Amino acid sequence: MPMSRMYREVHLRPDMVPRGTHGRKVYRSMRPRYITIHSTQNYTANAAQHSLALKHGALRSPKNPHGGNRIGYLIWHFTVDDHEAIQHMPTTEQGEHADFAGPGNRLSIGIEMCENRGSNLNATIERTAKLTAILMKKNGIPLCNVVPHYHWPRHGKHPPNKNCPHFLLDHGRPGSKWRWFQGKVNYYYRQLQ
Ligand SMILES: [Zn+2]
Image (cartoon, rainbow, N blue to C red; front, side):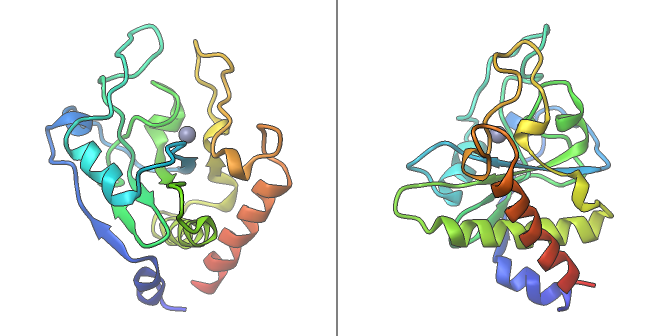
């Protein structure tokens, strides 16, 4: 399948947080080597609502030099729901979504899956798998570097490994559900060959 066709199926829409504001107030370049998969654990907001919140600087996180958020705001690259995928920042800039000053933030593209009530979670997972395959292809990222948020320990937090994305983990850690998701991503990635 040509990449352009899979792009259309993903319904990718850029709605960038303006450079120099909120989550993008500090410019930190990145050459992405990983893709980190999250779920929002927010049962009311879809992708468009998360995008608005990011643009308004509404998603704050305490700044803490001893192992915490580096800029005081949360930010990630893409939010996916059952209708579309929205891009919030370039994949060549570091986000604040994983492990504070760790490699998850410094080296990975962050994707949040919405789980708002009434949405079709399977459609969201399908769209996320397609977007992940496209990003792997574009950035030369292997499947083994597509990881759940769980993969990145957050130093100073208990537990250090977050149960995220909770609906793709088994008892809070990667197992058969995560392997099922990896299989889906691999299926779409191979279609792009
Ligand atoms: Zn997460």
